[in-house]
View 1 (cartoon, helix red, strand yellow):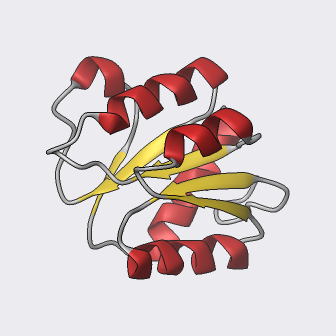
View 2 (cartoon, rainbow, N blue to C red):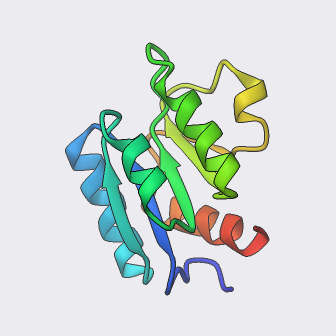
Length: 120
């Protein structure tokens, strides 16, 4: 799979900031992906019920909700990355998950996801 080509893949975007979520969704759709948008409030339900190829998770240091979601994704064999202003504090749960720090160009995230999916 070439970098940036996500045709036929579904990507979960868990992001509470609407403008950031919309920007990511637009870039992913342009790369051919289907997008399942979620907030921290409904991400577990969407991840449990949806067939996913990969996920982009907003890491929120004040919350531990991302840990349960990361565990669920790992159990389902879904590769994921963090898109956040902060690095993960819990390295055991997050081991192996790339972190892209905000702000970053959407193309960087699309390329990273293509690599994750291609290597999964």
